[in-house]
Length: 275
Ligand SMILES: Nc1ncnc2c1ncn2[C@@H]1O[C@H](COP(=O)(O)OP(=O)(O)OP(=O)(O)O)[C@@H](O)[C@H]1O
Image (tube, rainbow, N blue to C red; front, side):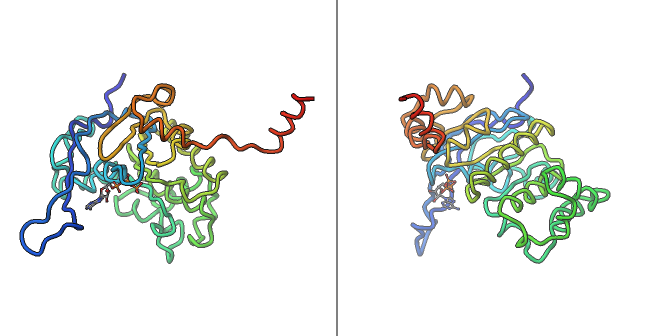
């Protein structure tokens, strides 16, 4: 097996707890990530799941180096990136991309889709940013003509594709996708999830896919990490974790997965079986 893209060792992170800020003296700190150790294999989609407040987004921000750590190591391609200065992180920024939950607030409403996708390409000095932007739009299933549209003219699913196009145009090796389908209807969700799987396979992309919804994780991810109060309570290949969860937290999340929709066809099949 190839070297994992990320190796995380005993990662701890505490932040000032603003709810307990004092008038004098240091603000007490709250430990948010409590000694996480895991690998992210290259070219796979790894789910990070857990209840609200379990630390999923904080962990994601550490991986894309928006946050440092208090202790431990975050090895990216074998190099510890957890304590780099902002200047030292700069060369990594293109390689570590992020897709946001709410594309309406992450896409500039006054810019065309073409400009939104082309601007980071220009910033990173790519040749032919406009051509590359159009190629990226086509890669996510949006026709070239969409380059002239504005975000408000698109559906939620199309906007999320623009966010994906903006990230993949930079040819990154890692994408953090934080709750990116939770605002979409079921059919747009399915399309975006299929797209992510195709991209991961075609571009050898590693994607950390954060969701509070295990049914979505099960659809799209090969591996899963289950967080609870800043600790890993289950981790491994999805089918293994789903069929043999080690933690009662995971079992509760699995039990919360809704059954497949019972529709008219289901009732018809029951009626036929009973006849
Ligand atoms: N900057 C911060 N300062 C202090 N506490 C924070 C900070 N950021 C997050 N937290 C706390 O850390 C915990 C984990 O937050 P985080 O957003 O990572 O959880 P999450 O699993 O992504 O939750 P959600 O599903 O609701 O987005 C929460 O209790 C949150 O209040």
